Image (cartoon, rainbow, N blue to C red; front, side):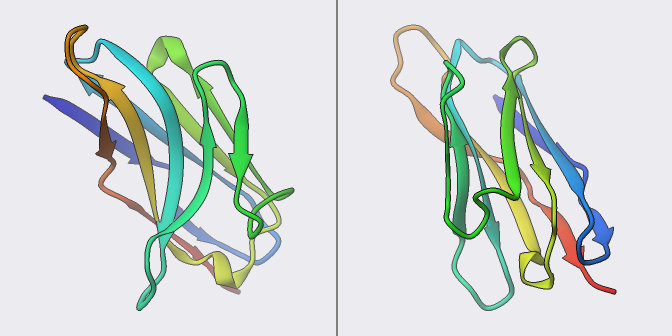
Length: 121
């Protein structure tokens, strides 16, 4: 079994910062890409950023230059540093791991439970 636990969400004023974390635990052979998504009320889940095992990152235009994704491979943890937050960043944020549970199995996607981020004055 694999479990992804997110933390770091909360209420922040416009222009403020938050740092999200997501740690994976359980039966894991290897982790490929890690990523972050979000879903606002009434909207579809939106891609934000991904980072490869080697540290290469990619961002959606909506967050490029404001959000930074990073990872700690030894801890199977991914982070999302969010700066210059705007009210439209309000959403539930989800982490995503593409990982293999065994050496002989293919990769699968796993999701965190979600953490609420609210940007409001």
